[in-house]
Length: 629
Image 1 (tube, helix red, strand yellow):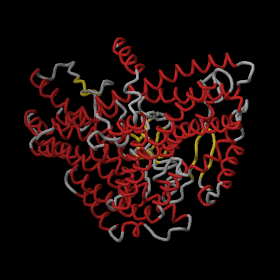
Image 2 (tube, one colour):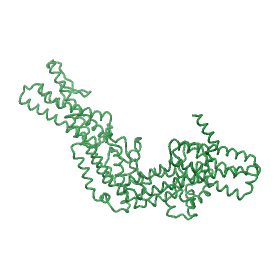
Image 3 (cartoon, rainbow, N blue to C red):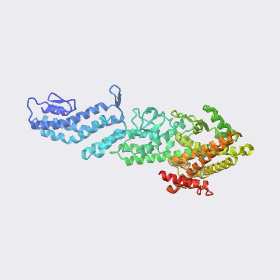
Image 4 (cartoon, rainbow, N blue to C red):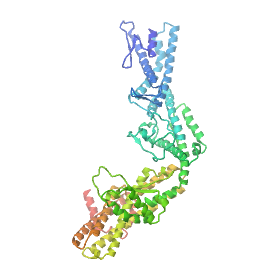
C-alpha cells in the first residue's frame, strides 16, 4: 500500500488513489483496509500530492515556447521561464519522495507518520506555487504581467517559501533583462509573442490601453522595428514605475534614431559610437542584474537612469548640432507669425479663396502660401520646409460656414533628422492651435486696416447718418485688436521665444530636459493666449466675429440702405461693448484670484487710459454675473 501511496504522491494515480476531474485525489477504501487515522494522514499527504501534480502539469504544458491555436493557449517566453522555474522549485519535494522510497525499501515497516513528516515541510511551498500558477491560468496573465504576479507572491511570503519565490522571481526577470539589453543598447525588440511592455503599433492596433508615447512616426525605422513604438501600459508590471518605463522607451527610440540615420547613409557610427565606448560596460551592468540572487528595483532603476543620461547627452549634442536654434527661428517665423510681411501678402489672396462655396484644392492652397513667400522675398530655404493645408472636416458637423475653413487651416513642418524627434506630430498640433488663433487676430486686424483705407479713399462711407458711428466703432475695434495683437507679439511670443532660446543655448546637455523645456514653452504660449481658458477663448472668438461682421456690413452697404445699415452698426456696437466688458471683467477676475502676471499685462494694454475701469457696462456686467451666481 505504501508503494501505491508514494506513486500517487509523485502524481501517478491508481486504483486506490484516484485522480479526479476537480484536480484532487480520492482515496478508495471500500474494503475498509485503512483505519480512519490512516485515512486522515493519507488525505493530508494527498493534498500535497495534488499540488505537486498540478504544478507538474503546468510545467509540462508551458515548459516549451509555443502557440497552440487549436486550444487557444499561448505560451510565451515569460510563461516558459516561469514553468521551468516551477519545475526546479518542485524538485526538492520529488527528492524527498525518493528518499522516503529508499527508506521504505530499507525498512519495510516504515510508518505513515514517518512518510508524512518527511513530506510535510514542502507543503507550504507547493501550496503557494499552486495558488500562484492557478491565478495566472485563471486570469490569463500574459507577458510581463507575470512578473507582477510573481513579485506579489514573493513580497508577501515568508521563510522558506519566500526564498523559493525570490529565486523564481529572478529567473523570470532574466527574460526581462535580456529584452532590455537588446532594446536599450541595440534598439532591437526581441518579442515574437508580443509580451514586452514596449511594442510597435502594427502589432497591437486594437489595444485601448496603449499609451502612444512615440517620438515620431518616421523615427523608428531601425533594425527589428517596423512601425511606431509605443508603451503598452496593460503589460507593464505594477512594481516597475511608469517613469522607468518611459525612460526605457526613450532610450530604445533614441538608438533607433541613430540607426535610421546610419541606414540612410548619413551617419557612419554604430551603437558603440552612440555610447561613446561605454556600451560594453552598460551591457555588463544589465548582465549582472540578471546574475544576482534576487530582483532589486533600486538597482534596476539606477541602471536605467545611467543609460538614459548617456543617450540623452549624445542625442542633445546631435540635435543642437543639427541646427536646433535655426529651426526654432523658422517655427517662430511661420507658426508664430514672426514674418509678418508673409501673412500681410497671404491674407488678401487667401480670403477670397477660402470664401469659395466648396473647399479649395490643397495644392492650390499651398501654392498661394508659397507665392506669398516669393512676393515678399522670404527665403526659399524657409518656405520649402512648410506646407499650408486644411485639416479633415469633422464628419459629425452639419455646418458648412465659410469661417470653418479658417479654423481648419494648418501648417505642416518637414523637420530633418534629428529634429523630427522634437518637432513631432503632437508638437506640431500644438503649434497649429497657436497658429490658428494668432492668424485669426491678425486677420481681424488686417481687415480693419483695409476698411480704414477704403474709408479714406471713398467718400460714400462718410456720407449719411451712420458715417460718424462707423468711424467711431472702427476706431474702437482697431484700438482693442491692436492692443491684443501687441500683447501677443511682444509680451507673449517674443518673451517666451527668447527664454526658450536662452534655455537651449545655456542649459545642460540633456535632451530630455530640452524636450521638457520645449513642451513647457508651447504650454506657456497656449496658456498666455488663453487657449486653455474656455470663457476667455470664447469671448475672444466672439470679439473677432464682431469685427468681421462689422466689416461685412460696411463693405456691403450702399447709399440706398443707410438707415438699415445704421441699425445694424448700432447692434454691432452694443454687442462689442458687451463682449469687451465681459473680456475685461474676466481678465480682472483672473488677475484678482490667480495673480496671473500675463493677465495683468493684457489688462494694462487694453485699459491704458482707464476706459474700461470707469465704464458703466463693465460694472453692470459684474453685477449681472454676481446675481446669476
